[in-house]
Length: 380
Ligand SMILES: Cc1ncc(COP(=O)(O)O)c(C=O)c1O
Image 1 (cartoon, rainbow, N blue to C red):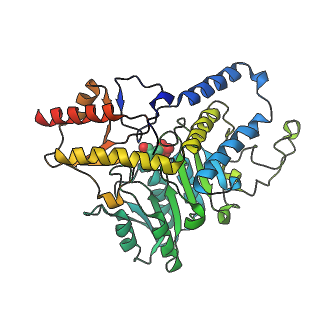
Image 2 (image 1 turned 60 degrees about the vertical axis):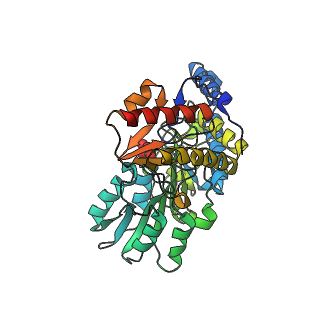
Image 3 (image 1 turned 135 degrees about the horizontal axis):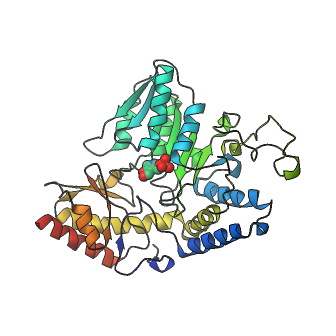
């Protein structure tokens, strides 16, 4: 397990920030990289043509390393909704077929599929929240419906913190084939994934949560079987000859035959990319397994104390290691978040769940303050 890493962040001692699922704080090293990046834009003569390609290559490499992918399988996007729209544009869907999604899924994983289903005469099939909190079993049962041809799932449910076993679900394709689109925004950076074993069609991840990155930047793993697919945009940087700035007017109809084909416009993003790189580098230094172990230990300790005051969470066997979406048997006061914020304790509420999502900067004092404040909230 890792020691507490609060010294790498700029978090005042009296702030109890247990809300990484909302947005991570930046590392000091990322802030430094970001300042240098903004300074460079004030002096554009310091930004070289090679920089249009080098930062994005480094970021792709680092992201690929977290999921056991090749650099040429990684596209750079602005958001999960951009990645989802790309997937929906490229995954086939026929009339009468179904797109499987989880109940209370994050909207960016739903809307593109609703539009596509409507256009194709297909349906959305919703997997209801399982009473026993086992999302994997619920998805496996729903897959007995042979009309499901696209499965859109996260690894961690953003509301309750339930974890899905992606390898088990992917293995169902040996008997019932479907396209698999995965959102790792609430898990990657903590829970490792191996795309060679899962073979998703598209796998999408925003950087501003567990990748400790900036807002408005994300990555998409694109399975090689889609490398000749349709990009959302038609820009200049992902075509043969892009490195030769003086000859961009020699127009070419070809687009790169790898995942860079799906890059968003202005993907070189000199301001945000260095911030993302610093976050990814730190995650590699710590190691996802060590992050996972440390956060599991912290959330298990919290869970134990929370149960003693009437809260419940997903069964430990299928809970994400870094995430507690808890409910209280007597319900929660409407103004609970405000009351906690008055004590400088920051969490989210999503649906009926109070969402506690710590990272390596959270210490014992954060946990004790949270538990004390929750007890007070329940008393009043
Ligand atoms: C599971 C999940 N996916 C995606 C996002 C963000 O989506 P987008 O990048 O489209 O804003 C969030 C934000 O909370 C999320 O929880």
